[in-house]
Length: 168
Image 1 (tube, rainbow, N blue to C red):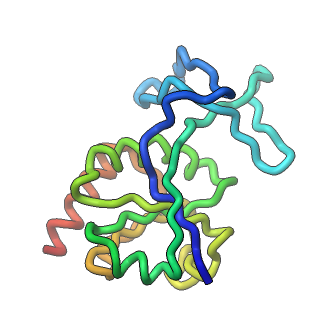
Image 2: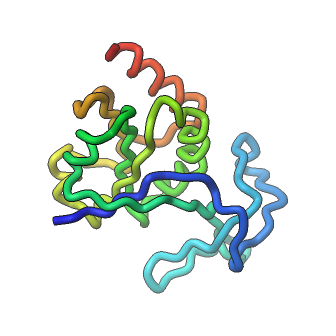
């Protein structure tokens, strides 16, 4: 059975369905990309209290196909930082721009991989994923670190750096 996994990449530079973001007062410590898109789950479009659509960052991911997750682990030259997520999960969506920042900052040290737990429940079950988002850092094909919940970019990078240092 072939699996298709999104490997996080850079943010898209343009899109026809994008809106400009000028202010996020309640999230002032976060830096969001200028271009955003509507976030839709099934037939429901998420709306803010004022009736305007809720926006989620547009991410461009490189999709790669592997015959198994184990093949991905074996063939990876760098440690893999795997984000187990679901499309309906709010904290998972919150982590999208943070993972992009971490992936870009640490591109020489790790490869960021996203696995949708609803599309690949067998992989989620194998690694006992019970909360979302769950992050697992693999080094040399083995679990190096594991944690659940959202973190900001500096905390996430520190956690990854610490786990990689301990494993060496």
